[in-house]
Length: 171
Image 1 (spheres, rainbow, N blue to C red):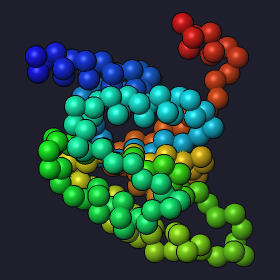
Image 2 (image 1 turned 135 degrees about the vertical axis):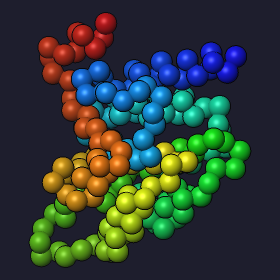
Image 3 (image 1 turned 30 degrees about the vertical axis):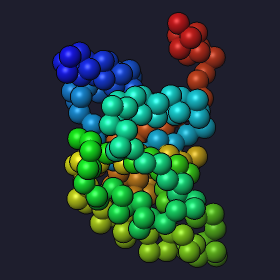
């Protein structure tokens, strides 16, 4: 029965990312992900795959709002070891840390003032017992934080489907 559950979860993860750049095994869950882009339907669909994968481990899933919750609280949850589950899923929606500031005159905002250093510290040694998923509307690929997430996890942009890609997606 355990092998059957693993096979079902494995098939869900295989559908998570297209085969274009996947060289890792289907069961390998990275410690950090960044999902961003305009196509919220596909983003939410991939989040649903993660929730499905961690479904049997209902005690290990937490959802935070990056606009309201402090990064200290989020990272404390990510660094905590799971109690009743093998791995924890921490989803951070509306993450403000991966966007460039709008103008140079504004300076750093209160939200991201010291948070970048905290996030760099976590990304240098992420908890392997947690899967931290950040979602954002926009992310600048040139930022050091985005590159740090890519080095220890995976970054995925969700662009709207073009007219010629839509029929293949609907099949």
